Length: 374
Image (cartoon, rainbow, N blue to C red; front, side, top):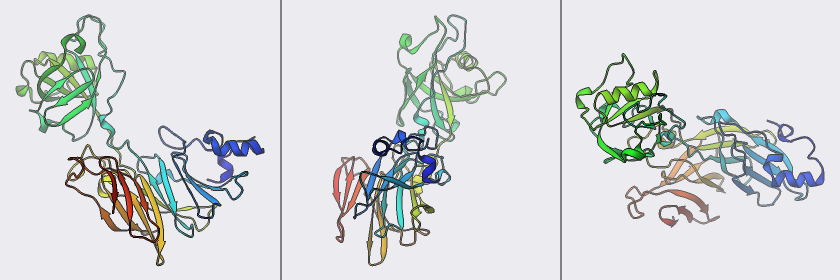
């Protein structure tokens, strides 16, 4: 995308030039992704003060010529939505090599594994007062997550706003609206029992694990294929005291690195991308804790002895060091993380990173534990 494509007509006067730098809505494109946010998250200025790399979230990485602070100019926009697995750009921070030909950009995507966000505006679709006879709440889950058939037998407590599973945490929920006279969690109070997966819960569908569902237990069904009212009535007929509707969400990876070739500053090329194992995963499992955060946050780049290295604060994945001398072939050369839970039992969650120039010290801020000097 050329700089002329992101400029709005009519902002070429001197006042407009200042405004367009101070107010992203005047000079940035609409952005990409489902939300298309275009706020500025970070900026890195070249040592001579002539260039600024502006991380503008879904509007991409903007290179400005600020050699004349009174007349800033857009040089280029590094933007390649295809480089992000979920189509979100989320430019968080960027840092150039000493000669400016390589720039490492972080994509901060904290919405990965977002199935914990429940669906909204669901109703039981019944016009008959008092029907269905049990309350229902909705959650979002991943396919293969714990609300599947092989997890039947867990016990939990359900309200209109949360589902608490013994031994497996608490999940936000949204209660389904009902017709007048139908029971709600505000009238029944919290309900506890065994969680039993019964399938779709639709007329004609096989009922799974019916023998495990006792009176007062809580039925779990998958969303889709029939009305919510039919699902609730099927669960009530089996003796359930409440219903959990599980929405089958699609998860995406976390944010990683985009490494750009700025040999031609006006036409940056995406040289490569880099992900850790957990940031590339589309679902928790193994060493990837479902309550962890695996997105790249901040980065600093240093050139020493003809080698270009990037230090990255990578949330629950620790602090990473990459050799990006060849931007088309990044190589992981160092990694720090303490898996023992050093912060009063909490894992590392690194947000900021700073490398002391020409010194071995790395300063990294951990949201769970404070400042680390490595």
